[in-house]
Image 1 (cartoon, rainbow, N blue to C red):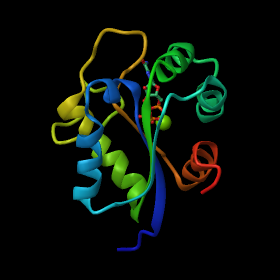
Image 2 (tube, rainbow, N blue to C red; image 1 turned 60 degrees about the vertical axis):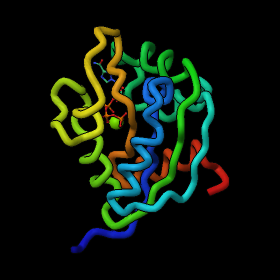
Image 3 (tube, rainbow, N blue to C red; image 1 turned 90 degrees about the vertical axis):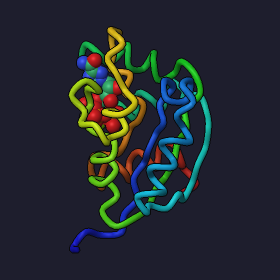
Length: 142
Ligand code: RTP
Ligand code: MG
């Protein structure tokens, strides 16, 4: 394999936290063979969410997304492993839980709740640049 050992930022979003799915998500990450490097539960503040989701500013789902993400505790993790950035995206499945394949986190555990924003349990960085940026926002000491 040519993939690098890399780090990704994973969030178990407030819907996943509320539904008691944090352990299940972490179990899948560890079962896949990725390492947990850092782990923290907190209610994300709007200021850092605005940085995190800067690419989506102005889109119709942006405000509902920040509202949802700041609605309660979420679990933030840095994970590490060969190819873990695309690897975790694959574990997570498609953004829309209705379309996410069975076997993926969103496919197995998510559904469309008919809300203004997809409440899809997890976030995972989408590139090495995003991962470095997002880890810097949520784990400034890392
Ligand atoms: P994420 O960033 O959370 O890992 O998810 P993603 O890459 O699969 O999705 P992205 O396009 O980056 O969108 C970020 C998050 O915004 C919410 N969203 N809702 N039309 C909608 O209702 C909609 N579109 C996006 C989701 O929570 C998505 O994960
Ligand atoms: Mg994204």
